[in-house]
Length: 287
Image 1 (tube, one colour):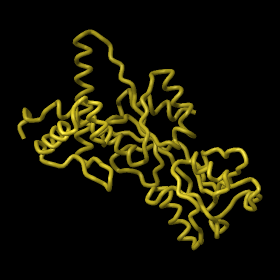
Image 2 (cartoon, rainbow, N blue to C red; image 1 turned 45 degrees about the vertical axis):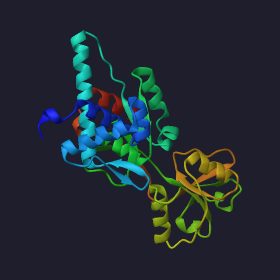
Image 3 (tube, one colour; image 1 turned 180 degrees about the horizontal axis):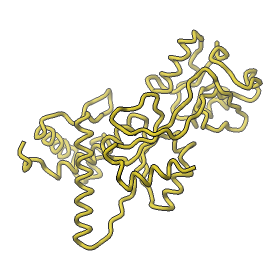
Image 4 (cartoon, rainbow, N blue to C red; image 1 turned 135 degrees about the vertical axis):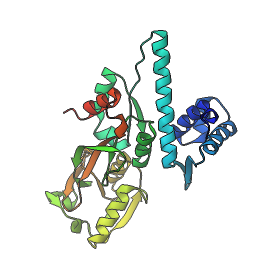
């Protein structure tokens, strides 16, 4: 494909779309209509000769080629901004971007985020593990933090923290008198769990099935704060990450035969020498 056919405007628009994975929000950010954005991205995909995104149920996801194109578009925009700053004799400081899930922000990354805001500033991206991986792969985030049981081959993953899985229950519950628990102790319990297909729900169901432990779903709820609130209301018990503090009236007991929860920092290997990435990683891994 002749390079003159590759529109830098379309690349910039695709980078915005890749950050949102939503045509409505991306078009609003770009101050153009949705049909106009659809046209730009369709023409970019046609010029490159490959699909840049796909539909997963009701959501959109970047293809591997789409992630590469989005990363290239952002790198091109950074280089252009740096060139123009140098040309005009002005300094340019890019704010680092960190992507992580709700639990990581609530219970793990608070001190690091405060330090980053005080030092350089930081822009935060919130999403589940899939969105964090996409943000790092596409360049929408410089560094991500996620729970990983399988390390991605295309990203650099560094262990950050590991926590046990614990059973959250009222302090008056019979199991609360034990210092630790096993999966067998959960037999017959009614558990508050995330919706199906999420990684925590899937791994918990797999472990309970392998241990031949009968259990029932009390409530399906999203997010540790809501799940723990429902435990305080007596709706059921819950298996949560050990980094989550127990609210008043609840206690947590480690389930010794469940695997620990490993948090990792993630960045693209091409970005290893980048000072922005180095600053984020140093701050996140600081004691």
